[in-house]
Structure formats: C-alpha cells, structure tokens
Amino acid sequence: MRILIFTALIVLLLGCGTEQKETTTRGRLHIFIPETIAPVMIDEVDKFLSLYRESGAQITYTIVSSETAVHHFIQDTGRIVFLPHPLTPQEKEFVKKMSPDFNELAVAYDGIVAAVHPANKAQQMTTTEIQKVLTGTVSRWEQLAFTKPMKGPIKVFYQDSSDVLEYLKQRLLKQVKISAKITRTSSDLQTLQSVEKDPMSLGFVALGWVDSALSKAKILNLGRTKEDTDTTFAPPPDAVGKFFSPDPAYIFLNYYPLKRTIYMYTRTHVDLAAGFGTYVATAEGQKIFLKRGLLPGTQRIKLKTNQP
Image (cartoon, rainbow, N blue to C red; front, side, top):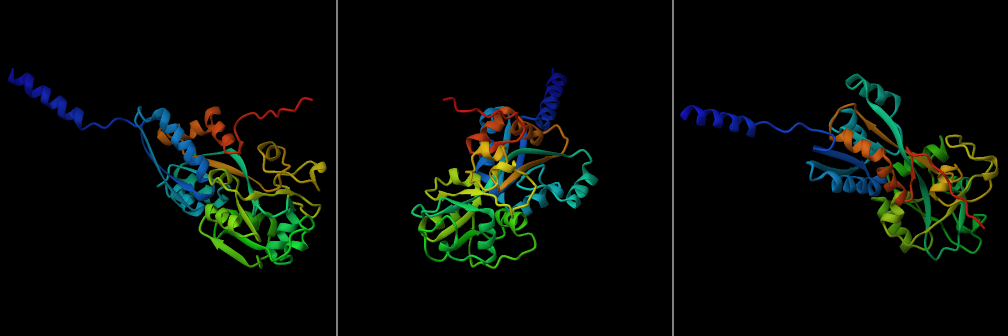
C-alpha cells in the first residue's frame, strides 16, 4: 500500500510540473502593433480570443511605432509582426539567418486619407496639390483649384515620425524636403481631433483610424494628375484626372491614389503566433479588415455592380 501511494505521489508531482505544449490555439503571445494599423489589428486579436480563449489562447499587445515592431521581430522578441510597409532587404536577410523559413504575406490594403474641418467646403484634392502643400509651394486654401470658397492659411497636421509621414515622403516627395509649417501630433487620433477643431486644418491619417475615432472630420476625395507618375499601384488611364474616396472598391481598382499594403511576417513554427496569423489570413479574419473599410488581401475580390 505504501509503495502504491508513493508511486501515485511521484506521478502527481511530475504531472504538476509538466507544462502543456503550445499549439496554434493555446499558449501565450505578445504582439507589438504599429499605431497606424492599431484599430483593425486590435479587432483581430479580440475576435481570435473570443474563439479560442477557452482553449488556452492568451494574447496581449503593445501599441508601438513600426520601427519598434520591426526591431522586436528581427531580434526574435516578437514572433509575428504586421507592418504598413515591407521589411527592407537588409532586414529580411537578418531574419533569414535566424529563421530561414520565415514568411511574408500581404493581408490587406488601406490608404492614407486627407481630412479637413467639417465646415470646409473643399471636396477633393490632387496628389500634386498635396505635394505642393507639403513642400510649401502652396500655403493657402484659395491657391487650390477646387477650394475657391475657402480662404486662409492651410494648417497641416500629422503625427510626427509616423508611418503616415514616411509614406507621404516616399510616395509624393521623393527627395524633396517638407518645407510647410506643420503642427505635429502624438497620434492619428489626435490628428483627427485637431482637424475637427480648426477650420483651416488639413490632416493626414491612416484610413483605419477614421472609423475608430468616430471622427466628424470630412475625408476628401483624391485624384491623380499626369504629373503623378508613381507606378507602385498603377491606375487605369481613365482614372487620371478623376477623384475617388478611399472606398475598398476604389482601393482594389487602384483608383484611390494613396494606397498601401499591410504585410504580415511570421516564422514557420507550430505555435500560437502561427495560429493567429492563419486566422488573420482566413476569410473570417479578412472580414474584419473589410468591416473597418480596408481591402482584404488574401481573398478573391468580386465587385458588385448596381443594377438599374
């Protein structure tokens, strides 16, 4: 009897000291989420946990800059990362040295939007006009072609050292420096809040924040000109000179001119990071992007036409 009790105690103690193996729906994961895409990615986390929390999934997150998110991923202190831009070739080589089978996937597409005060009568701007505003060539509302009723200095707002700023630099300015007088904010949310308060304001934020902030700011329709020769997302010729909202359909057709890709980077492991990444790429996870007004990246897109 004593031998049986002693054996049972050993088995019990060994069992208590054995941790459950992590799976695609069980384990712990911390994600570093770039601020510019935070609203939709938080939705993705919340939905995943609603499905798999009882299975043992535990996901936490920190809102950071893209640079910080990249740092954690390449140093392997972040097992999965979502970015509004691709890793550089140097960063990819660094990751491959530690994880040769890491993966890159475009999971969605969003855009940068131009927001103005609700009372601003402006409805649209061209990418060339945005370029001129940022470089200081144009500094007043009446200098713009489609805002004649508006008069006064243009007050530009955007988050300093953000993905929005970097996107505008690479997409519109190339090597030209920003010379306009800028009011820098601490976040996309603060940018929208500042725009709502100043009738002369022009703010630039990521599309996903417009819905999240419940903002009353007016979002301008944007259009390309012949001077806009960027071919990253080349539009059909008949789109040049016309103006489009950041609707997912117009993003899909490359009509909306300030389009960008949201990338997911993972390492090939059977763990909770892989499970969450797989969920984001599935039809269910892609619907969350669409609900936020973003364009799904992994699903087949079929546009519906309005029937008379």
